[in-house]
Every structure is written in C-alpha cells, then in structure tokens.
Image 1: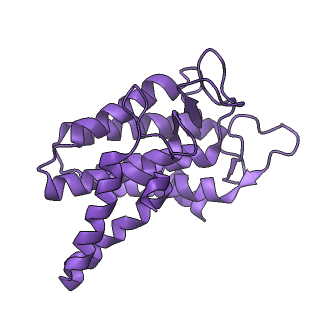
Image 2 (image 1 turned 90 degrees about the vertical axis):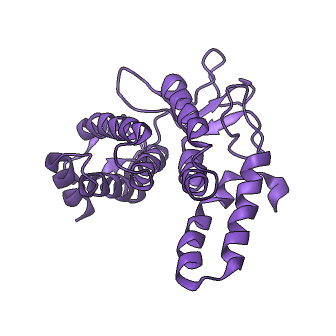
Length: 228
C-alpha cells in the first residue's frame, strides 16, 4: 500500500532487477517502477531526507538508508542516467552531519526533525542510544552502495571512506566472544545482551567491503571471526 509511505516496503524490491534480467519478463521492470513512484512521492524532512514512514513524520532512521537508497541508486543508474545519485549522497551526508557522534564514531538510531517524539532529545532531535542493529543497517547500506556504483565514481569512494571509518569505530565495542551488544557502547549495563543479528550485519559489511577492495584484511578477519 503505497499510501503508507514505508521505506521498509522498498528494499525487497532489489530482487526484481535480477528477476528482470534472468527472465526478460516486463512485469518485473513494471514493479520496479511502482517502487520508484513511491520514492518519488515519499515525504521528506526539510533537510530532504526520506521520512522513515508516514506513521513517523519528520523522522530519519538508519534503517531507512538500507531500505531505500541502494535500490534508488541502482534504479537511477539503469533508468535515469544516474540523475538521483546527488540526492542519495546528500541524504547520507545529512545523516553523517546530524546522527554521527564524534566521541565514539558511532551513529544514533533516529533523528526527529520536529523534536516531538518522546524519545527525541529536545535540542538535537536524536534518539538516546546507539542501537547496534541500526548501525548494522547503515553499514550494509554503505557496502551495498559501494557494490552498485562503478569503480572510480566519487560517491563510491565517499561511501567506502564512511564504511572504513565506521568499521574502525565498531572494533573497540566487539566483545571477547566476537559479538556486539544490543546497545553498542554499554556492555556492562543490566539486561544488555550479545546480539546475533547486528553481529551478522557487521560481518557481512566487513567481509563484503574487503571483497570489493575497500576494507583491509584486518577488518575482514574480524568479520570472519564474528561470523564463525
């Protein structure tokens, strides 16, 4: 239901590119066009980032970067001569500016431009915690953007640099068992726990980044050990 304007409904559509190519069936390209139409109409913050969904007005979540931007980049490269690539980069740059914490190198999960959510800091609009799974969505978004963009493209290098920066910031918070905690930077907090899905996300980003030639072997070894 497009009127929900939920970015969560977009990402699974990436499979449509492969189905289109494998089968030659025009319905898959048509379905991609429907997803693209949602992104064309999707509500945005004043800073021009997509709302995570209509039910959460003025909110940017790290999750949404993974859900929407890789598909938008691939669609734009194949159907629009890359016309939306500056839009995607601007959205990532805004997240880096507003949701990045320079003390830890980590990213806050959410940002509410309106400051009206119960969780939003009244001054910054940020959520209070570093949620590892959200950071995992972001890491996967970055590495998938690197994968989709051609070598030599300036945006590819920019996303690779952000990925490398994030990987280094995550290493100090990896626990001795190779996992990351649900709340990244509070390993001793009561009821915080080792979290498998974020660990899988980081392993994916680290290993794929190394395979694509933008992360070093040390990072890949960490990813492999955490996957194991």
